Length: 408
Image 1 (cartoon, one colour):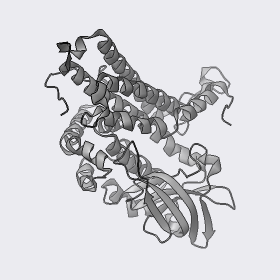
Image 2 (cartoon, one colour):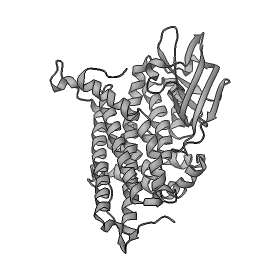
Image 3 (cartoon, one colour):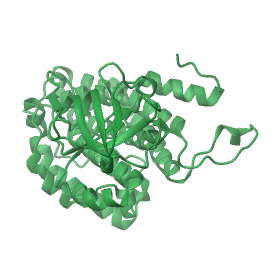
Image 4 (cartoon, helix red, strand yellow):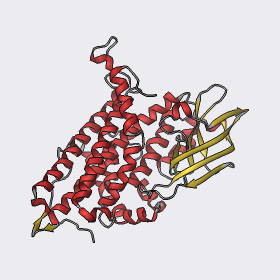
């Protein structure tokens, strides 16, 4: 049976970033924590083992009214800490939340027509309908911008979609998916609010995952699917528009890396205090203490970087030109993929080290899911990979700071 500490230990938010929140935000974050403690934490391990998504949780999750927090007047820091706290309890539930709210609902806010918002937004905000984000393809992940093979051909007042998508979170059960396809005639990328029940849409769950087992990832096949022009996102005209969403999503995955580290610190610290070897607690051994402190340092550094990039994402990023090139100033908020990429790559690399150290502190108990560390350790690998691998994000940053692309 897993150990549960009865000691009052300092919180893993060692530099008190939460103190920067307003009173309203702190109260809301406390409400979220209580929800996660009672409704998610007791069951998350079993959901993960069974690869089961708890649809019955959705009305309770919707009642928190946390969809797209910045749209509701909350700060970017609060929005990030919401994702971190969800991940701290269960990475899979946080991933569901991000896919639905930070991609699907945000797309409605940013690119939906007045009619589309009237028709879908309220139901999406309250989780009466669920959404997915269908971009990645079987043969195109990092290179999907130039390699997208899914096609959309105009036929009067409809579009005919053909192609395949892969790794689509929420894809097995969503009501709608924001699906991306290329128009062969113009080469432009189009976005569609695809009703997942339409004829020609075939969905298959991806099995045998070793991470995010609760998340229902799907392979999607589209065969002659007819979509009304009214379901095309008129605000989408190129892949540059997709980057608006991906930048924000990349930052939120960085916050997931923070949340995974918070969980690892919580679990490893409690274990080190309670577990005794050679007649004394593990925490009394210098090497164990050094590992705990390194984990904490990684977590604090990652939190600081994500707090700053979240703030910048809403107000405009300093450009490379501002550091001395002609035309200095601020890029508008539509820019800044390099800053998002650095935050995600850095935080996810530190996360990988942190969860590995935590797993090591638990010894053999670190590889069984009775002790939460094994699940945190496994789920961290998905965070490290999605929304751009460490390598791709690093190349994006390198291109920004040198003006020379090493992408091939």
